[in-house]
Amino acid sequence: MNTRQPKKSYKQIIHNHMLAGHSLSTYEAFDLWQITCFLQRISELRAQGVVIQDKTIKHNGKTFKIYWIDKPADTDNNATGVQS
Image (tube, rainbow, N blue to C red; front, side):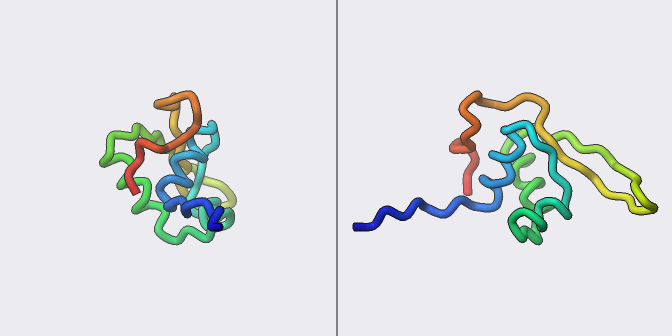
């Protein structure tokens, strides 16, 4: 009996995290899930019509961006509409 859940794509993981109201940076995505292609996944989500906001942050002499979604597209926090 196989009860394993299908593995979510990095794009689905990122989208679900943002739909839950969290922001993400490249470093945070790597720290949480070891995603090294975070910006590519952001670009793919945007190309699929997901409106992702970003802001440039300067902290301790470093400059980076954080990304977030203002309003979830659906209320069940499930990125099933995002293609893998």
